[in-house]
Amino acid sequence: MTDMSLGRALRNNFLGPCPGWYKLTLLGFLILNPLVFFWVSPFLAGWLLVAEFIFTLGMALKCYPLQPGGLLALQAVFIGMTSPDQIWHEVSRNIPVITLLMFMVAGIYFMKPLLLFVFTRLLLRIRSKVVLSLAFCLAAAFLSAFLDALTVIAVVIGVATGFYDIYHRYITGLDQQAESNINAEHAQTLEQFRAFLRSLLMHAGVGTALGGVMTMVGEPQNLIIAKTAGWDFASFFLRMAAVTIPVFLCGIATCILVERVKICGYGVTLPDTVRQVLEDYERKTSAERAPQERTMLWIQGIIGIWLIAALAFHLAEVGLIGLSVIILVTSFCGITEEHAIGKAFQDAMPFTALLTVFFAIVAVIIDQQLFTPLIQFVLQGSAQQQLTLFYLFNGLLSSISDNVFVGSIYINEAHQAFEQGRISLEQFELLAVAINTGTNLPSVATPNGQAAFLFLLTSALAPLIRLSYGRMVIMALPYTIVMTLVGWLCVAFSLVPATELLTEWQWITLPKL
Image (cartoon, rainbow, N blue to C red):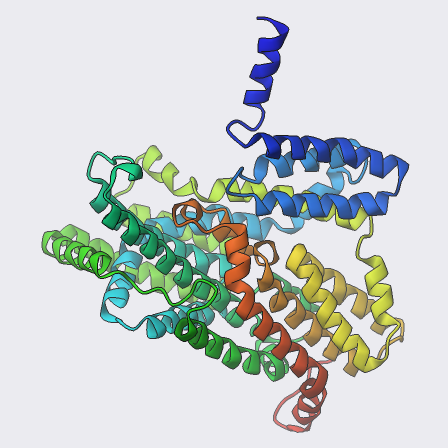
């Protein structure tokens, strides 16, 4: 093999079919990072790495972020921006999240027949797009208040994938001919159907944020904040209510408004052709459903009740509950072959690997102390300024980083300031509210701000319905503006009066640190 052919082979093999400009950009990153780290500033190099990683997330449809992001993370270790021990510490600390992805998402896979049955009937019974969007948003919000947002979005993705597969098989035929060969009418209908599914998924994704911020079990950082502040479930909900209830109501109003005004990709209705296909599919499957299949649906329904109860009462870690769902569903539905079980893990494992790479970037943020100047600046302000700045900085950083990391860092710094006597107990509790709402609300601005959004972006469904990073940012924009502004107004003006009123209620025993 000649040197020229060898070089061409290396270029072709590196990141495979990715565009040439993307490959050159990544190589430029890998060349620039050590130069900035050793010759300019490790701190600047750290922020540069964060920006580069966000770029790889933004180009997820050009190349799955695991490979380019993983190369950046490996280089960070080799040049000393972080260490394998620090990365392992972050991974170990987030084992519940990793096991959730490994087992809960796979468990939901085995319950797809039931979910598709329920949501197909819901979609076909509700003809108003506004009402349907509201139903998806409210359902996601309610479930996310008790379940993990990733679990909820995994359910919605599974249902949307089922809808898409039904119609796609119809227009392409059993031989799965290329989409380029379908007629123009079907192609136009398919694009409208994709837009319809995108809007439902985004409404559901935002719903997970609206509901997840309310309770201590809604998001992982909520639990960290609640434990640090010494709050139980009821105390957490009541203290957050001054911010979360107005934001929830305004979020629901935004859902209705964007559908009626038809902006940012919303307002697209379900094509009549697709509705007919889905109705025909439902009638056919209902008629052909054997007694054994009906029994399987009942079994999955009972196991679904177990899933909700186990998660709501925290009978075990979420990942273990997911594993129990896998065992129960496969045992009682007759799924015993290894390859049939293995298919359930195909969607979750790439994202699990990507999340582990994300923890490596978080390790760089810790070792290079990228957030330290911001925290010190915030604590220098007045009591009221601290609330506003904690909310805004948490929102800004959570939209470009991991909100679990941001929330845990800020609550630990605030608690340390309280223990040192720099702030009072009352101020610490107010800061805890600002930190929790700050990490959950403005972070809907970008896919990497919310784990549920990132999971949706990197799912197998996203490229099928043309849901890119940029499109998600645009579709989230109305929600981002409303939720961020309403949350900021509540933190700045109504949080203190609401807390003072709360302390006057004699029937509530306020927890002490």
